Image 1: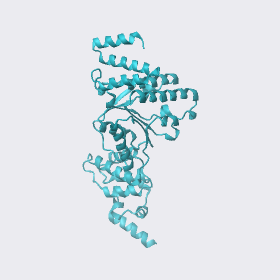
Image 2: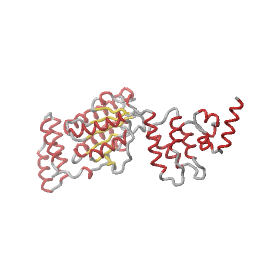
Image 3: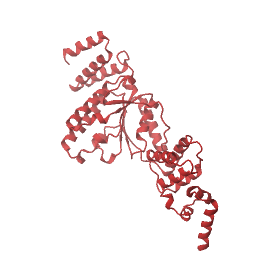
Image 4: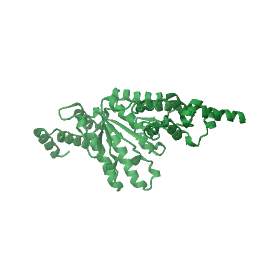
Amino acid sequence: MKKQNVLNLIKYHVERNENAFRNEAVSIARYFDAIGDDQLAEYIMGLIAESNLYAPQASDYESELLKQIDTRELHSLNLPTEISNDIKGIINAVNHNIGINKFLFEGLPGSGKTEAAKHIAKLLGRTLYCVDFDNLIDSKLGQTNKNIASVFSEINMIPCPGRVVVLFDEIDVIALDRINRNDVREMGRVTSTILRELDRLTDLNKEIVIIATTNLYSNFDKALIRRFDAVINFDRYRKEDLMEVAEHYFLSFIKNFKGVPKDTRLLRKILKTADALPYPGELKNIIKTSLAFSDANVEYDYLRRLYTSLIGNIEQMDIEQLHGQGFTVREIEKLKGESKSAVSRRLNKEEEDE
């Protein structure tokens, strides 16, 4: 620590420049951490965290690398019980305040990882920040390395760390296994920086919550995985879970389409008939577009579109094939747009031919 640091502290205090005073104090804490005096570094950071005198509200902070995410109006989460229990466990762990604060969410795209992070921040009553990878990643890996150090420096300077969650959404871009990247040496430096900064964050800031998400867990750097306190798998949806998610979205969306007839029973039958259902993110879009693209003059057109998206082109399906899938005469009438008598004649003719 230099004399200038002490002079800066006095200067910022006299000027009542709270942000500058706090930043200088954090720099001093980092200095002591770098020379091995962990206890003094933690003590300084603890004083900063506990005092509101020199810290504005966490929600007042934003930078080029950290963007605040609005969590005031969120849709309800429709997660399987196993994942919901893990989310509750994260809330409990953070509330115990024992330093368990870094979590990795892994799973396929659309499985609800990012939305879960938003809900966790809201349930904890914390401000959510997301790392802006557009500004973090540089064409020069050396600059990316510096940017990573900078973003962690900014994380350590966020006011009121006990009121903050930081999200590294799709951290894959900087955390893939080093042996799978072309420039092993450069990626090794980037990963080493992340490892070092996460360790330092653990030492200096035990209150801030870090959540990272990845779609490519199998390629994730193993040393980095060990830096997280818990890994939550979001690929635990059964078909029944996805059917419930789909019905929830359907009931939410159809309220906005006046005059469109609601047939939840046929919806469930289409969902059950599908060999496999996509994860919530894609499922939500399929249901939304089926309703939005439907012809208002064609009754149940949205169900025909839904069938086409999840099972196969409804125009190419024979009445006999639909009947073989378990659809009733009335349901086939809705899906094919033919009269009940026409459907019945076709089915009766089929039975006579047999």
